[in-house]
Image (cartoon, rainbow, N blue to C red; front, top):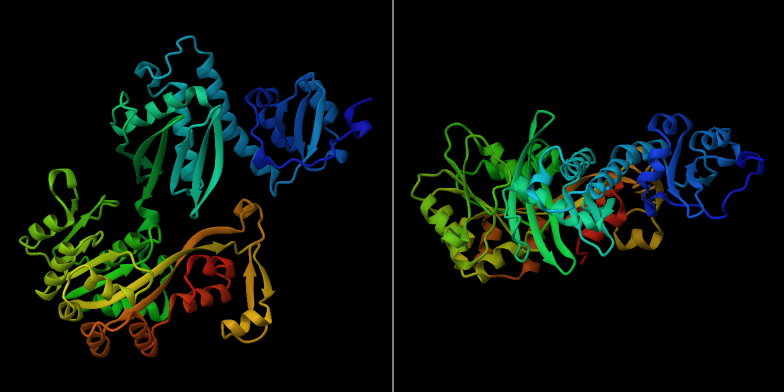
Length: 504
């Protein structure tokens, strides 16, 4: 009696996210056969039978074919993944490839794992790194984390701000993978006791992708993080970042002012620098001399002079800004105002006829002016120089194909001052979003335009609350209200908004 006749199935369902198809199992069934039958080989058990994931095992007429093909007893396991066909492609094209390459490397008799001659472009380790990079680009990841473990090294991708497991490989080759990345980035492969930084520039499908590499020693080996900087994806203009309506109109008006400081605030990872680039591109006209000071320079912008901060050599933000002001600039972009000296120089530059764009780490727009004052810039100078402040947060966008509407509870509607029965949307998960319920990110903005009244409040060093109330009275939409508007429109979820914003 065959398995298909007996209907013998394990009682529990197995989630693919917790399994990593073994190379031995993948080699027993070709990709063509797996795709045709919609089955995914997982592991070979201790007794030699093959575990295979299938959508409807009891109705599957292929168990006999698989047993004949593999010459093994086949155990069919029900699938719980949204799109098994996509997982099959991923396993064979990525996980399976990594596993097979790892096995090839370990079976090589020349087992000096970090020998440079074993890390050339054609080596299995090099192909492992290339496969990881290609997969990360395909999944629109912003970072690749290669993390050492006791038995396995884990690779995770940051997708839409969240880390997700991508693949694992034997810990025995972790050092070789790290060495290969270091070679590509021009780093010292012999140094494993100190952190290192490097850079890789690649052409991908006709566009340039910049990789920033960082290594960090740990007790189990070096952790490596690759940040992907895709200029075409990042520099999408203000509209492409999610700025719209009244906020977009306010920013456009601020950018028309021929001098003064425009600040962008928010926590680390909220997209401030990307927004600065979008603003700079809008200002980058042929008759302007635009200069940036960054740490590091993330994207190359044609027609703009970009300066890389180098603290070791004494080129700080303040030192670079002093030199730039002798270069007859019209527009100056500072990656960040970090100290009192830089704050004072930026204010003075704005007062002498320059447009200054920069970022600060504050929770909202109203806090920015007082933060400059706290850093040592005189209040009356800040009041005269500051033209506007933006605050922003990044939230994940709901997948439009599977989002599900629901009515917000009455108590929450009252708290948020919304009509009863206001409809929001929740994530569900489908094959098009890989079961996540979200696809991509967008920004929420609040824009404070400094007029005479707000300038007077700044000069008197009034409280953040007073500044915020005045700005709201003059039409500023807060981060909270902007987030709620996007949630009501089905762009994001209620949970995303209030997970990203400090609600007062």
